[in-house]
Length: 453
Image 1: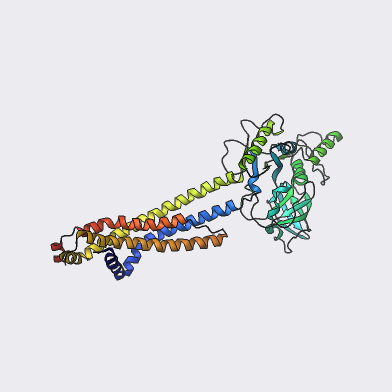
Image 2: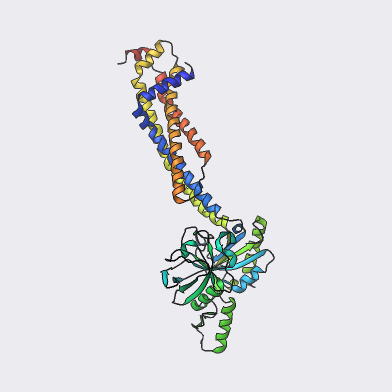
């Protein structure tokens, strides 16, 4: 019997039992669809996150001081140790293009005109180049030392009348102090601009560290002396318990806060001259060497309990990608169980088919069919069920992946290697689950088969 005749007879048998064949392939369909759908979503999510790393951001190295044994993502266990003087010294290093502090400002609310909205986080003090020009929808970057701010669309749109470039907002920080800022730019996305923020969409306001963080650091005692600083004009006492009434100490504290040298930053961003790996490593090494030297202010805190960690966006995102890979493998494992159940279903139905067609097998052998012909016939039927399940599962998985990526607003990435693997798995499942029933059918004695009722 030629292969085409075996396929024709197998297909006729499958069509003769449509419902049974459909239920048999259902396990294969679900298993392969689950694998492709979740692998597609995982690949799309990775592409979406990695795609957020712009060429400019690829030259950034993000650093913070924490206990070396602390587990977690960026800023886990971070402590404010790097001073403004440290940042100036790092920026002057040959391998470094720019260096600036990063610190979330604890806020209570944001006002625009007569309208006020609660905002407990999302106010971020940092350097001008942190908000890259290619991320701006309109306006410009803020300038250090100026009372300016850049908002993302979510922050600008949380008022009844959307805030636009040129408007003025008032930020109420924790403790009740208020600071005004002129909006000079609107970003084009609500997602975070660095791994420090995460990549979820939420209202964010970016302001220069000087004066905003310098003022809050002084008021909270994060520097050597406590002062609201330039623009605040209200003394709040020192952080070491010294008498704030002494004029000389107060003047020194105010001057320290005014130039930003007294504030300690919870994180720093160091920019290399380019995104070249050698340049990035050189900038990272130079920053670490300085901060760990006795010349830095940070060195008084660094040691066995605290150590500086510097990582690029790609390195920080690798942690997330590792989690996604683990989740993907978990889903594939679950789907593999479904495929196992599907293969058992095919084997079971093929055994039933052998029993039902015992007399037919006897007639085939009586008219000259060989064992290999019967083996090929039943094996072809099992393979067809596996391949049909794989094709339907692939189509369903691709559709589910597309809908999921569209709903979450991710760039669609199809892992074509998994599509090819799905077809291969369908064929393999059909062969493995059909081998024993086909072998059993081929071994049927024609005399006993003809007597079978």
